[in-house]
Length: 153
Image (cartoon, rainbow, N blue to C red; front, side):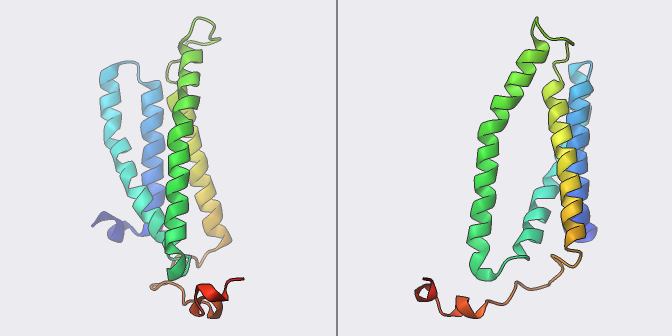
């Protein structure tokens, strides 16, 4: 309901911006109850991924949809493995006795910066292909696709 009203591109920008705002709020919260207030914008980040997947799925032919979704899921899985390793090290360093600055929110700040970077990457990708993702139907199969697996050498 929300994404069709906003449009896919705006939903990605909005969702990622709300994620960055939420992470920034978590990083700078002086008390636990303040973090609760930032859960509201952070929850809106759920608009970004469905819209982004929709945009990407319009860029590949119908016979490559499984590959696209598999690649996206693989990237998300790798991130789910690597992010906790990195973020717990950041937390441990900046909350530990040898920290140059006591800042236990450093991992949330790093997450906010990474999300802000992804917004910039998305904007750059959209500028590089301004008409991308606007087709109402998936791309037509290429002639080599119609021949099936036997045509693959």
